Image 1 (cartoon, one colour):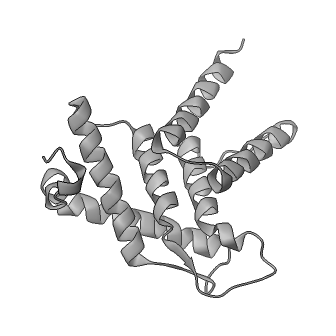
Image 2: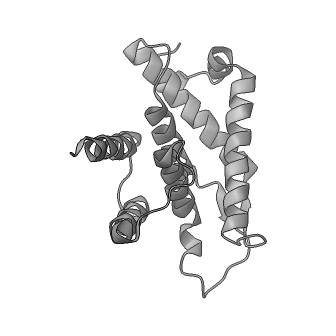
Length: 179
């Protein structure tokens, strides 16, 4: 692999990960985005820019390839996978507004809101049907509000997103440990 980033050969990504893996990641993300568009009732207002999503997937795998080579590891953990994926989705912004809506203050942040949803889905893990207790709702809502704020207005790095995800996991462990 080339060590100089400007000489990086993206054919190496295909060789190192396999075309099928890249296509699978692309299709999975596209499916999540389609579901998000339906769930948020953005059909006709937002579309997926396939070339931009494709670039985000390529950028993700390029980062992971460099990370694996730098640390001399074969696999990375799920937290890194989701943090780096979220980072490149935020950076590239594959969800594009096709019909503006002056009344909808959330529409300009469609990519950030999607990434928040993507990260929250990862945080829930296998607990897809989590019901937040009414006495805890304000804390959860505060976390989601803060996450959205950070994704919109702060400088984001993949490492920062990884720290957020690891902190969440640690919080769940602490919660289970309280006697």
